[in-house]
Image (cartoon, rainbow, N blue to C red; front, side, top):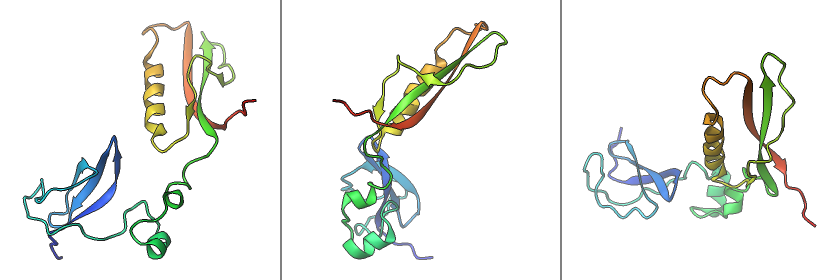
Length: 154
């Protein structure tokens, strides 16, 4: 196996960071989106530059047609739902009664479906699930999220 003294872009890690891989030691690391380092932070090899290869998010057909800079709507537009939002649902259970039906949690926000929205939705859902009194058995809550089409505002 060849050890190539170059680095490659792997994927976006969120929060302005990207995942890169050293092709000499094959180990990955996170760095700013403007990688201007001369040496690998893992193995210390001096790089010759970036290896031109297709990132994971770019489909092969888009790489062949547009090269290293395909239009973003071709790459990311397929996964995003335009005009959609995350909504939080809740249901309750009193003592040994059966669970109520799922209903919209009006105390929770609605969040637009965007590329990074899953992380914020998950954090809010985890925060909601942790609320409550330990040992409280009279009423129990169950929470979940779903995507719905945005209501048209007139």
